[in-house]
Image (cartoon, rainbow, N blue to C red):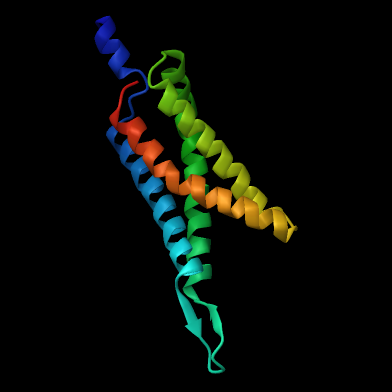
Length: 148
């Protein structure tokens, strides 16, 4: 195999695994984005005229957490054959390193949101978590489309 062809194949995902990564990424991003819409823009008014969270808000948060478990699992699956091989071959390091940092931050901040007791800390971490999560789509698309 030529050096150029070998360099192209390093870290390349099989089609089924690539589709799984894409569906999990889309599912994680969409459930988080939809939860944000329900959290900040969709309210219901009760019989006394008070604004309350929409009942679907909790459902979208739960769906996001479930899909995020699959995202963390998939990251572990990708680690040896895609992440390490790509990093060691110096391919797409800027976007790959950025995605690694984003995934690590989202994982740790998601766990913190679940376990932290302080409302003050939770509100700041929540804002950071969803801001980074929304931006993760751009990082993912850049990594997918561009060879650095």
